[in-house]
Amino acid sequence: MARQTSFIKLEGTMGDVTFYKGQNGSFARQKGGVDKAKILNDPSFQRVRENLAEFARAAAVSNILKGAFREITLRSKDLRTHNRLYTLAVKVVKSDLVSKRGQREFMLGDHSLMEEFQFNINATWNSTVFAKYLPQNSDTEVGVAFETFIPGVKIAKPTGATDARFFLVACAINPEEKIQPTNLVYSQVIKLDQEPLTGLVFSIPRIIVENAIQVYALGIEYLQEVNGAYYALNDKSHNAAKIILTD
Image (cartoon, rainbow, N blue to C red; front, side, top):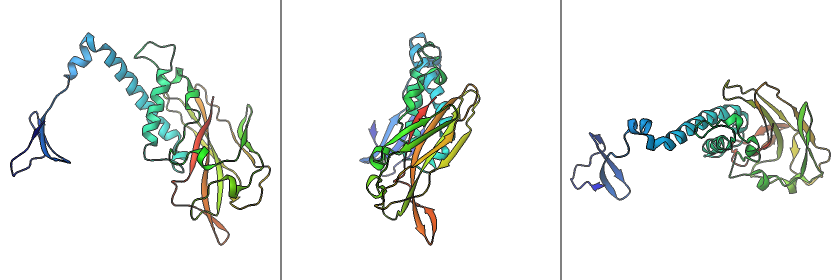
């Protein structure tokens, strides 16, 4: 790396030299790295090619996950949710215990690794909702049953929120066929006050798609009541959501 000392500061690439402006001045550096043809053909780069193949496969899956989880990320996400979905896809691909290295597949991996994935790392479920619930799963539905709780105590309340509601999202994922049907259901609207709430149970029908992974997520979004109507808060940074089941 060389520092540019001329009164004319260049930016961009000329030949094999890149000129750029950094925090401490203007610099120039020569292009480096290994030739692409060598990476693709040299036997000594076999492990690199295997890793690249699996990273590419995970990247394709992460794009499918983004689409499948759109109903969730419209309501709850952080600046790095999509990057973290890619990291999650890589983890699942590498958990494939059947295929050879470089050929491992998302569909053959351990999909339970996706459970407890938080869509908003700045507002996780456990730091937002303190009410306990029990899963209510059957062959046809996936649901949750909350124990009696006081919403004003057991749900974190951001500025401007008067109410909240939970939501369940169900989607089916098949990277080969790009199947990603998605369903969304809401709970009743919950007043964030000091009145105990009893009997909160709601569910979503299972999505049964051949050769697909079922994924179910639970989330919360905040509302503001104005003249009897409920409006979702524009600031969604407090909304939380997590994957609760894969099947």
